[in-house]
Length: 255
Image (cartoon, helix red, strand yellow):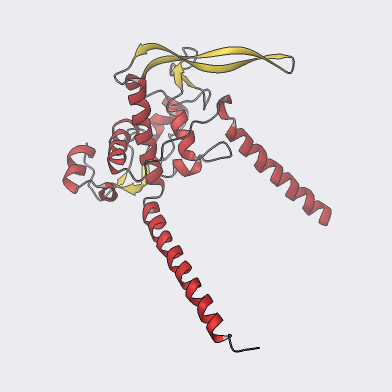
């Protein structure tokens, strides 16, 4: 029985390791480090605008209410005027307008909810923010796919490149490399086919804002949690010092 339990635990640990390894090398490229913008209110506001304009038409964020955007410095009139385009109210959750049946016909499945996507995509290769940041910047034209697009991080992805007008059209450049007696195509960079409305630097900055918003949305209270945690640690440090000195005073006459 013990041997059976040990074998089961070993198999589970091995499976977890394989999944983590797959995430680390997903798409065959190393994940880029996403900029940390969860404390940058201007970046979060721009990210919220990008999310509503380009993502919310297909992807819901059913665990986020519009009025929670006040936490990133937006007023209720700003939310109503700039981020509500149909009949939603400020107190409602961010639900996509797309019909699930139509989505399944168009994309082969209903687009996932993005409320906690920045946390769910973390792995051994990097954080969920790193994954999303790299994913949004590695789309390329592929006429063999139904959508006309493919992605280095998520090969054969069903989602089209909705941000292509901003980035333009690109194609990856590979170089053949000898590994263990076999030729392997190694990613070397990008060739710009048509320009976008943004420069590559501007696009990367915008994707950093969008990913920062997705990261914030996955846990809106994280900044408060970190801030409170710092004060708690400082209090415990001071209390430990006081307790240590009191202990020394109480026991100084005891032999």
